Every structure is written in structure tokens, then in C-alpha cells.
Length: 91
Image (tube, rainbow, N blue to C red; front, side, top):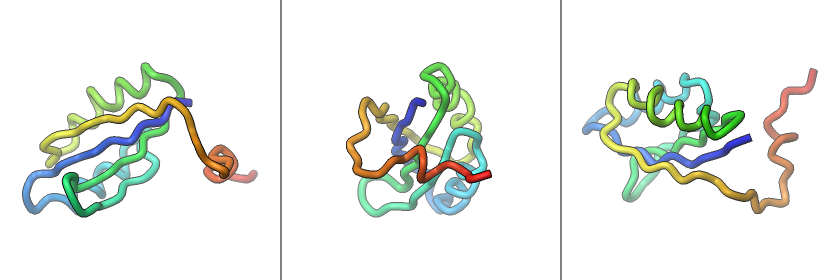
């Protein structure tokens, strides 16, 4: 699994709309509105690096209202929580 944090600035007055559109993009698991330098933070979870690259360079660029992004590719998880268990759906 490939995880990344994507920092996003939206066009003026479009933060909520961009967040809602981002939440519908396959590969984006969460979107947070934030205070500070960036308007939104999106968490990306893909199967591999190629899928992440396609998400960032193609699918996100089609989301109307995004002004700029910065992607932080996760290298290691430092957590006491088992993220796979937290985000899995029990069947």
C-alpha cells in the first residue's frame, strides 16, 4: 500500500466544493479543511506508487477549484494503531 498526504490550496471561495469533490475521488480516503498555510489536507491510499502518481498527476488535476498541491509521500508508518484494521470493512 502507498500512502500520501496531499496539501491543497483552493481557489477563493471554493474550499468546501473542492473538499466535497475530492472526497469522491477514488484513492482519497479522507479530506480535512484546515487553518494555516493550506486550505485542505487529503489522505491518499493507493495500491502502489504508479497508482498514486496517476491519482496526483491526472485525477486531482481534473478537480475544479484546486489552485496548487504539494504531495508528501509516506515512507514509514509510526503509529500504535493498526491502520489496516481501522480502515477495513468486516464482512
